[in-house]
Image (tube, rainbow, N blue to C red; front, side, top):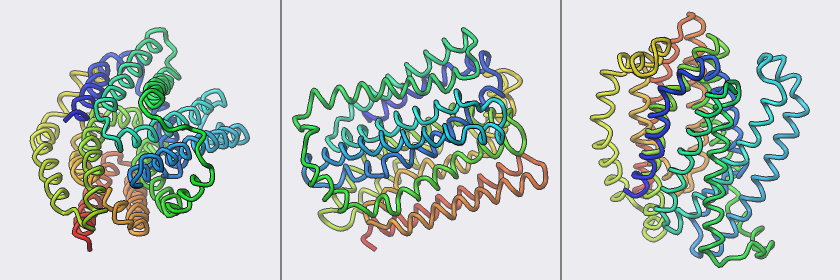
Length: 404
């Protein structure tokens, strides 16, 4: 409940600001942000090598803190490599994607990637030590900083980069807040044994071996609509999609993740002792379903009418998109937090197979929609396929929670 309170406040802020932002920025400018944000999210799955997930697993806090140090090192090095590659291939990227994607614009992507990686690493550390209040405050600070800077940049007509710069500044504020709290509250030195870090990295080598690719594939599948809508139908359509992601998709993901954070901690603890955690799994599943039924029903019924009124007439199509994607959002909210069972039960290969399949059905949905020149058909197929895939994930997670 502590995490949900913080994340609810953090997500209400962008929702409140959205009607203002849609009048400060055009759908095309939202579309540029959507593409840059999509690339940043895809690359952010690489920078930690997924070692941040292992912070929850060691028995001692000192070992977990050594993994946090490893994550910091990997984030910084990988982000520098991303920046170098963007610099080398910036001309080719610009000629492929268009004049808007200059080096000055693209270089923001590795900066965002680095900040997201650092925040995620710190987030898992404080989740391990049950500092839920601190995590909730960090979410609120990120939301406040992001919304304030995006509105200011929009007001002063830095339209082209205002949205992505606001996102980066919000992440930076969250990182600094949590990093300062680490230094104040924990007595573990960053000058710890390098040999021990190497042992821990080797112990959990399956996480980068299987989960890094799986996470990148999953994030690509989630962010792919932003890229494909822009490529197949135009930047405006990507702008519609990123708005619904911000107003609907992001709160769903964050609120489900808040419940999932508690589930991860409890399930990991219970599974390590009993080799099963089906009781906590079923309990969390029931909570997720009960919490979601009414909001998703209202979303399906009223979203096409609400978007045009709240965000302006030119954004009404985003409301049609929401109705088409409601089955996908519902299944994602219910089953995604429980998919941590793949990691607890060390079913990395099965998780990778699921992620690759999800990416394939996403690509197929949009290519069929493009073939018929129909953006709504593409999103309808994507929603149906996503609902089926997340239901399968939920069933597999339940089996693993029983020790099977």
